[in-house]
Image 1 (spheres, rainbow, N blue to C red):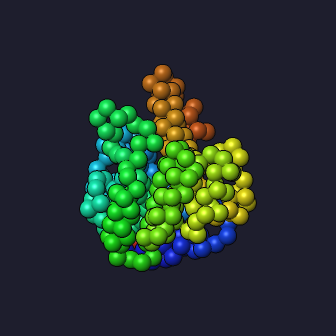
Image 2 (cartoon, rainbow, N blue to C red; image 1 turned 60 degrees about the vertical axis):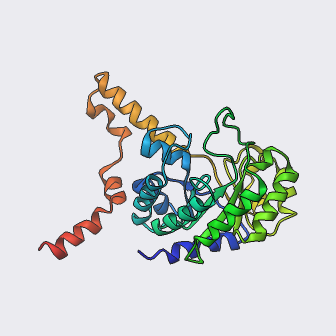
Image 3 (cartoon, helix red, strand yellow; image 1 turned 30 degrees about the horizontal axis):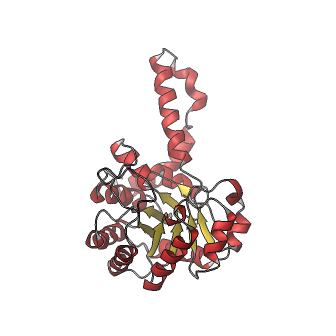
Length: 287
């Protein structure tokens, strides 16, 4: 498949002067819905991958191959520019290089590699302030960039160091920018003061996760170098609730006909499954 256009579209977002909210997706259908609704970017998080592929919490027990396989399914379903959270790259710097190679082949437009100490260390808890050393972080970013064969693929350095201090975050973002990452993902940023402090010191686009409170002002974010700001992963949460509520109602004896108003219409199902295209192929190829 040709992923050039979707990667160029993502780079256009980074090169612009406004902030966009990505559509959080988790499978081919959700990605098609996001594309049909006009989202410029889709987001597939490691936490959501753990939930959809394994039914597991976000404890990084997912494997690279499982992650890449679900990404491929999402990317082949449409033309949405997909960004993904590749966590720590599934190991050391060599694993990071392999991760980039696999995810590029799967079709992503952008990926993030983070400097958190993952997976959970023995006796160390799961704090986002457990960071690898700056030198190791730099090595991972270099390895990620070396694994890229398509120059249009966006490689972003992700850091939660802002939870340690703004100064530590600035130091790390500058170091990652110096080796060539295309953007910096600030995990844990929660105030305008934090974002402004970082944006005033670096010259690469910023990405934010789970924005709320005073960081919901898209114009302000755009004016301060933020090009993509996540809004959480509500579609997956909504899907879980919808399935649970429907199955519970049926188990409790509610008649299927009484649930009709809560279900996707045949027209919507036909749209998201691309039924018209399949029907055309039947006519063309099966006579």
